[in-house]
Structures are given as structure tokens and as C-alpha cells.
Image 1 (cartoon, rainbow, N blue to C red):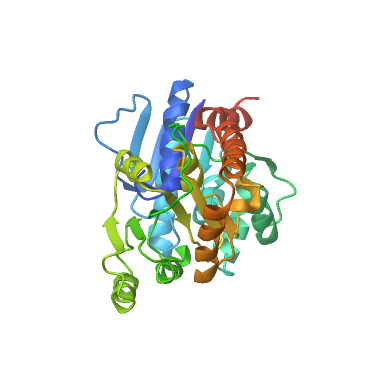
Image 2 (image 1 turned 90 degrees about the vertical axis):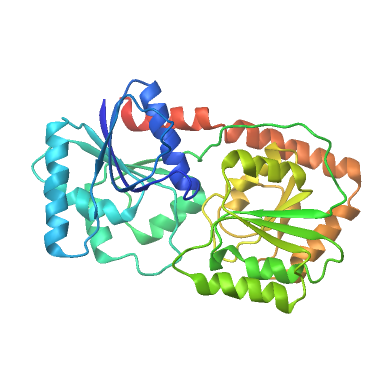
Length: 357
């Protein structure tokens, strides 16, 4: 099948959703689908080869001005016609309006993979209007489906729930239940709860926190606030920022850590750091908020969001838990995640649902 991926930012280093789409394209190629990529920003690694992917850069796919928008729609229609596209796929609602207009008079199917939730009440009338062009939808979990069902009328759209998977890089090690070195991995944004996490380490004597992730270049103020918080609480020797790292380097950080912490204060769809951590034989405690609750149905790793004391108490609780009981609960969790979040299985299921009749 000839498939067009409509992607705002084609850069697998920007986050989990972008990285997932990148690997999804590779899987499409392995299944002998022909893929055209249309994006506003392209930064795929140069050493990766895509024999059946054509990169066509469009600077703007959003309704910034009527002239540029309709110019881009005309370009998109030309690409669809020239490449004889049969299916268009996106994972952002900002492209719905573009798709609905581009589809006028043309015969192709459309789908969206809902990898996000928006912590905003303003979804927009244009997105709701554009949704009428969508034929199929994939949701990561029930939490994401419930969220979007409140935003849009989805009854007429054929849909399925398939989680985002990871390439399982399993490392079997004895489970640690005495914690000294802690790790945060992810974007450095306000909704991730890093102020709460840093404040928790004021309550934990002698322990160290490593923060790995990229600051938002458009929000230097938040970067400054975090660094000032560390200084104010005199945690300079305990809390260290290591910036953005490649995945292979992140695995090294996982292996050196005793525990990983996800302190989000806003709901997340499906934080894959949780799965990656557990696959490296490391406990990962997390805020009891958003889609994470479907990833770990045993609540022994959850803590109350937006509460430094809750983080400190959860760490003490796990240290005081009988080692055999902790190991058994962790082992059950690990096997469940191994079966549910294998990337090859989830991607093949998605391809089968979307493209195979």
C-alpha cells in the first residue's frame, strides 16, 4: 500500500511519540509498504537508510495564515496525486483541518494514532471540523480513548486500543531494595513535576538525584527556576542535571541508578520510561495520574501526585517491604510489561488494523 505519513516534527530524539513514529515507518518498510513522509521539520539520523521513504518538507502544516495554509494544502494534494497515495496517517490533531480540505475530491483513507493528551481545554473548532475526514483511530489505552471521547464525537470512526511498544532491551539483575542513587528521564517541562521531585530530596538524607532530559529552549525561565530551587534548598551536591542523552547512554544511566522516578503533576498518556526501567531490573515509582495506572495495575509503585512527602514515603515503604514480597510483585509486573509492550507485536497489530483488509 502507498502510505503518506503527515508528521509535524520528524525527529526521533524529541520525545516518545516522535521516536515511536520513526520506528513505525521502519516497520512499514519491512512490511513492503511504500511510505512518503510530509513534515514541517526533518531531523532523522543520517546513518539510517529508508529505501522506500520519500522526504518532502513543508514548512507549515497549520492554519497560521490563510495564504500559507492553502498553499500547503495544494502542495499536499499534489503529492497525494503524484504518489498515488492510498492512505494518510497522522498523530496530531493540528493536521485534521489540512486533511479534510486535502481530501476533497480525492479517494484515500485517513487515520490518526492518538499518542497524546492535551492538558488544555481549548482543542479548537477547526480540529473538531477536521476530524470528520478521519476513517480510523488507534488509542494507546482506555485513558487516552476516554480523554478524546470527551473532546470529539468518535462514534462513526473505526477504532482500536493498541499500546505504544518499545524495543525490549532486557537486563536481568538482582532487584535492589536499598536505594541511594535516583534517576529522572524525560522532557524538562513544568507538567513533569520536577520541582516536586527536587523538594522531595530535601527529605531524603544522603541520596543523589540525576536528571536526564532536554530543557525547552522556549522556556529558559523554568530551567532557571529549577537550578535556583536546587541552590535554595542546598542540594547542589545531591541533584545533578545531565541534559539530553542518546538512548544507549540513557540505558547506562538506568543501570547505574537504584530507582527511577516519574513525578508528573499533569496526566501523561503512556510514559514508556516506566517500561524501559522495569526491563532493566529497576524499580520505577510514579505519580498515580493519567495512563500510568493502566501500565501497572498493582499500585505498589504509585504515590500521590504533587506531593514531595508522598515520594519520600513511597521510597521508605519499598525499603521496608519484605524483600521476597517485593521481588515477587516486581517479577509479575515485569512479565506483564514484557508481553504487552513489545514493539514488534504492537506495531504489527497497528499495521494489521490500519492497512490490512
